Amino acid sequence: MTDSSRAQGGLICAGVVVVGLIFLLGILSGSYWALAIPVAALVFFVLGLTFWVGWTIATIRVLRHGGSKTESPSVAIAPLRGGGSMVSWSSRW
Image 1 (tube, rainbow, N blue to C red):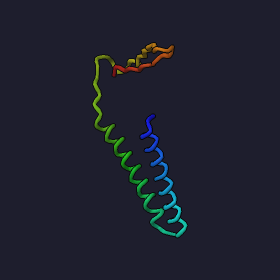
Image 2 (cartoon, helix red, strand yellow):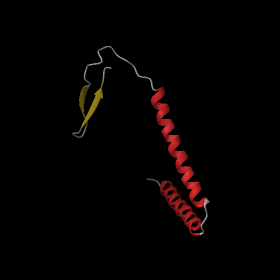
Image 3 (cartoon, helix red, strand yellow):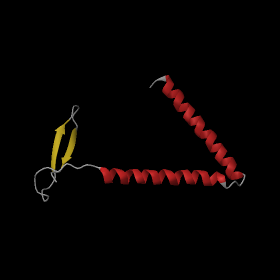
Image 4 (cartoon, one colour):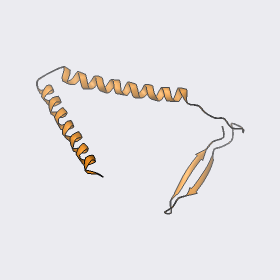
């Protein structure tokens, strides 16, 4: 890890603390906007993420290989360096 990465991490932490303090001050002063803005941002983030997942599922291209749909998926286990193994699932649908 480089010094610039550590500096960036420190700046992110400092920024979060500042934003947290501003949010806390807004809550303590009774400001409606202190709650409305973060909640709206979270709702729009979740909506955008959900739309992205739906778009990805709707537009994915699936290559179909020869074979029947009733075949069970096959499993290939490949040894890795260091003694582990990697399991690879494949389906011929």
